Length: 219
Image (tube, helix red, strand yellow):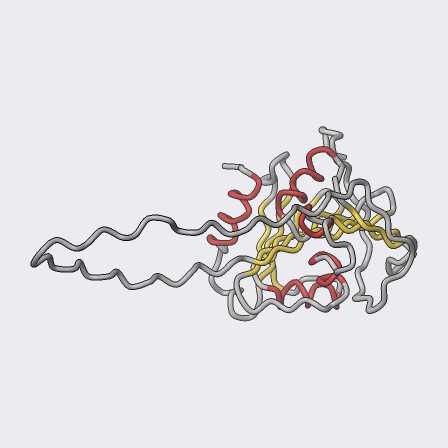
């Protein structure tokens, strides 16, 4: 068991995609939807150009960086599974075992576990829509861009840098190719990095290791 009891080691269980919401929907807190505000209107006219002034070249617009999709699963020894799609909520849960906004499916896990979905505040403002964590769990979320995910189970971190590898883990309950570092987690946990046929011969997955360290603020 971990020395720090702010979160407990988690019992190993399997995860199967579910297509239908089951159980009861509950929420520890619901934020009121913010009121919309009218857009500001420009008042001042642009100053006239000075005589014979040469217009500066307009810089080419830079493409926006692709947003990384996150998905985290915590298998808890209390018999519950916590799917979370927000890194801040995930880290807070690991720290203190609590989530502010949740929606639950009682007994809907693959072995009768209760599923407790971590929901972002903006998602809690409109509970008529599925949260990202629910869409991931139900197999209704596809990722075409950058992805980062973790599974925390039995006191170990399993780290994924590709959604396809994560889906393969969910389907087969194991990872075929891995790179393991013992004692490098935030509290000395073992960290297992998922590899695939393309990356298994590249050695230590430096970028994925760095992503894990940055997320958990470890050296």
